[in-house]
Length: 170
Image (cartoon, rainbow, N blue to C red; front, side):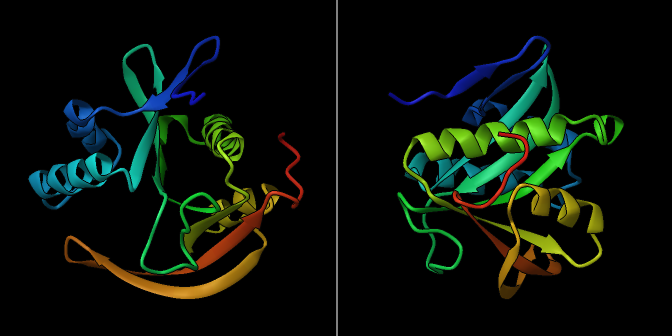
C-alpha cells in the first residue's frame, strides 16, 4: 500500500499534482517558470521524481523533491537510495519545525516503501541546513558535486543517511 498524503492537525503533506507546479514559484524565484514546469512534468510523469508539498489550508509552506533513480548511483538507486533536493520552507515559517516535519514524514514514507539510504545536497554556506540534516543522520559526505540550473551554478556536498543512523525525531 502506498500512502501519498499525510494529515496533521494544521498541515497536510502530499505529492504535488502537475497542475499545481506553478505554485512552486511561491518558494523559489525561477529564472524560467515554463522550463521548470516542463522539466518537473517530465520527471513526475516518467516516475523518476516526486515533489512533496507542505500545506496549511491551501497555502504552500514547503516543498521537497525526491529523485528515485539517477545516472549517478551516489545520488539515487531505485528501491534503495533516494536523493532529496530542492528542500524549501517559506521564509515566514523557517525555524518553526515545519521543515523537520516535512523531512521526517517523507523519509518515513520512503523507508516504509523499502528505501534504506537517502542522500541530500547541501551548499557550504548553508550551515543551518547542515546542522538539521546531521541531526537526522546525514553525517557522511560521499561526494563533492557541481550542477547548473537555469544559468546558476551550485557547488555542494552530497550527504548520505542510512536507516541505521540516529534520528532523534523518529
